[in-house]
Length: 331
Image (cartoon, rainbow, N blue to C red):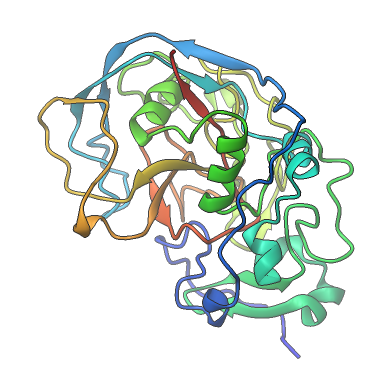
């Protein structure tokens, strides 16, 4: 029987989100299915049209996590694009699944990662199959998936306006293809998340909680043992629980990590770039970029709830703090 850790190991800052890489589950699932043909059209979701622009991407922020590759600051020019105002919600994803019969990778694997604080103590030994050695608060839970985010017996019935979680990059791409969209590039995502502000730490300025007002869903307290929920939430929140940024986008910091289209890379040039798509060729690896941080982010552990911040994960990984939103080119 698995015993729930009582004294967590010291936080390991690279472990912002759990990854299947290196776990015994990594070779179990079949490749994800493509969405089945459907006569049900994808519903139109609220989106924001962002015109062509040039902005300063990245940061030289001293508090950035070493190795994340946030810098150097460089000018990036973007063609106009549409981007969802909100992350894809459980209600949105349910429409997709009902229309296509799509089965997520977490469902195919039979397991997904859940933060230990979301698992009832009395069920821990029953549902937890393994934990990550570097971050034992990440638990591989049998039966955890988008409909049952904490495992068997849990439900999204009261969370239809929350972001869908336990979706891999492959799942997100399948949804995007069905809806006639794609995932945003990292540059598109960062420009949209900045909300028109230049080189500010957050979408609203340089203070996390100006005048004591919480503007995003992140961790308060002592990570990973106590989240006081001073912002009103100790897990995910509705996608519109906090005010939008200057571009009209909601939930771009905290709540859930969001997949981007790009392969992961670091070591950027300070030279100007136009519509960057991430690395190409044989050296690009397999990991994909995630942006925005999640409800588990805390300054002492994962100071990545900033538009310039970034992390990576394998495209088959899913967890209780990973979601996505879609983008579309301008026709």
